[in-house]
Image (cartoon, rainbow, N blue to C red):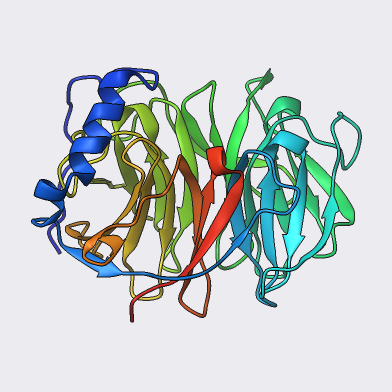
Length: 314
């Protein structure tokens, strides 16, 4: 199967400036959206009770929804219908406490992994929020600020993205560093502030490469491919933040500047933008995203302090 190769490109501007806002407006302008392929989303409900700057979301096999409540340094747990059940964690550096948590993942047994960025560790909790243990995120004796975490389908490899070392690290569940790749740069296999990470059932690892405006995909054989490129047209990315996979191998990418979620096929070619009424669905500061077994899409909208829940098109 042929896939697009990663190429070097000019660096996008850092920071959300008025130029970026105008670009986002251009992407969503009526004269442009008519030419943008869209697939209809059906809004279901939003999760907002007690949330402040939610950055990521994950769904357990039992349907519980786990939200990284970053502004409150904790995890908020909701039932499938949207009612808040409980929270766990608080600001601090002790066992079970958090400082600026960012990303979240769930392993096959239902344990919850939290990227505790400010404490340079990944903390592991039971499905009910009980503290289990922590993995120190260190490479070469130096602390790394973890941004996201994902566990493979076998529950044997924990993938962590590092904000300050521009790498992806693979750990065993007991915290041993198995291997790593990356480093700061724009070439294939290099990153500039990697963010969200997801793992496919086939072992492919998908990493949002934020300032290189792409999602990089690493095959089990070590080959790298790219999803998207810099720009504001359909199939291009301006500030990607979240990535998720559905059961058909499609790749969903949220963009916090363009305020949309775009969808690519398993060959990493653009398919459509998720929308409503033939226009892209506006999502304010879209960050982490998740898709559950029932074809629901969850989008953390940081600046709206909520998670929007939609039914995906079949």
